[in-house]
Image (cartoon, rainbow, N blue to C red; front, side):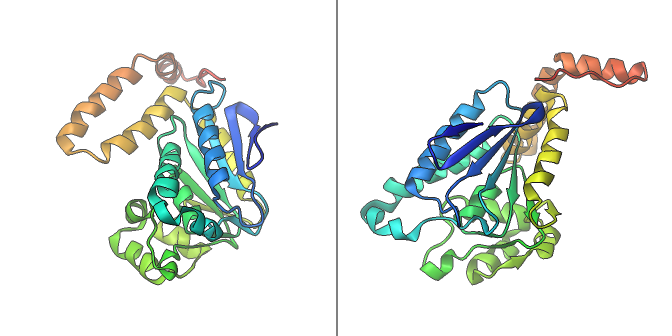
Length: 262
């Protein structure tokens, strides 16, 4: 187990899976020091050749993360964007732009900046007793670290505005139904479930997995004409990889493929 300072815990698991834990219980508030440690951890993970999939969680069972520590606001009040939101957005963006998949395992309460972190991940697994809200409206603000543009992509503009206008909690079953999360896990088992899925992904052809993430992220922002060109360019890359050759050969010879592992 390797610790980066004290607020973000890193643990290497099987098959190239890495567990990252926001370690600021009981609510795992995103303080300025935690933000900085988290950003540093993401930079290191992105260049670690032994890591294929990242699972992100929060310590304890009360909350995955409830967002910002409001007690810090007086400290940054003279320049909230410069002292807080700029770096916070950059850190959350680093999750989305990480070159390998990131799965989020959430227990308990998830709200505000906590769910903005989760939305930057590729998949979300929530405990059956978990619940999600975007309550920033009750502080007279809006989700300023990605929620304003990521939430509508998950649930559509109307539902996103409902959540942001009202700030109400959405229970676990409804979270799955409307697309806030991918899957539910029994209470206390969100990390276990996420690690299982991560291990399944980790043994898939790594270059293909990375290009899937890159393609979904990048091509969704482009026109059909632009996407057409890039899609062919990605295909040209992937058909040159050893894993592609192995997968095709295994299919033709009716055997199980032996993809390259960590």
